Image 1: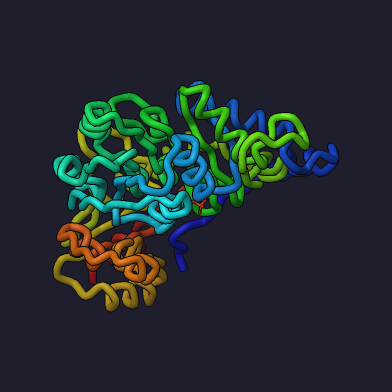
Image 2: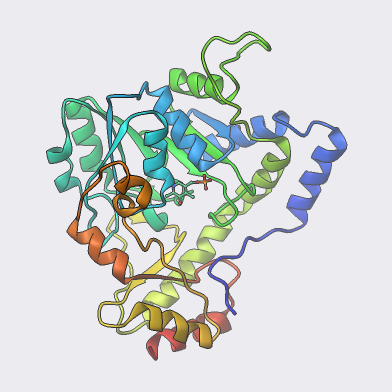
Length: 355
Ligand SMILES: *Cc1c(COP(=O)(O)O)cnc(C)c1O
């Protein structure tokens, strides 16, 4: 079976993990600091603060912007649940705006009508490795005095008009096992604002700058040096991983037939966390079974709009956003990861074209 994702580890990860174990410093230490420095350089931001996951990155970014009970944050309903849940964690309310059917990202044309006096931030999600349409999003945010928290969990290294994901607003990244680069579990907050960076640092370690003196209520959301060691080795390979994903996606774009292939808007680079097609006239469940029978793994990201998840229904959400409703029924992601061989790509094309 060609798996939908496959983490790539080698001697580089092993050597750095060994170095950390032999050093005896396994919790947050010098490797975390080095990963932060290199991650900020990758994104072109002044600061990067490492945390325990993409979810905690989002949670702490929102808290660092002062978001809490009574506030509203606008985000996409077509995403992993963590985007919206991070808003709930702070006591604020997520407000969902529909997506564009071609990019699967927030539709900027629908943003302004969702802004209320309580709105404090916009959280675009750079889904599948393609950045949201940041020019109009930043313009609207500035005009209304709103913070922008980018959910860049799937977009390490993606660009929009030459600028990196995570460098527009406060960037939140995941380093989970299946992402474009990984530390097994982990996350990163990127920013140019020294106060935001400082607050995230405080919040990740029990509100403590000086050990055992606590200024604010914080958490233990630290990353460990063991995880950072894996992350450092992965960061060095990110460019090469993303280039392999781009080559694989180009091949699929050129050869797949009778399905809607992904689009890449002018001026953007896609880093293909997922390669996602849409089946407009084919039964998706049957297609998944047929692909499986030919040895091709696939997955549905995501089958249910966030506002239809039980946790949101239980909180009174009663929405139906047309583009989101349609794409949740049609999307199917195919393997695009760096470990695919030419033979794998041929197998995927043959299997999809005979659906
Ligand atoms: C993976 C992911 C997250 C959460 O990251 P974790 O590291 O799993 O906590 C948030 N948002 C999106 C869009 C993701 O894909």
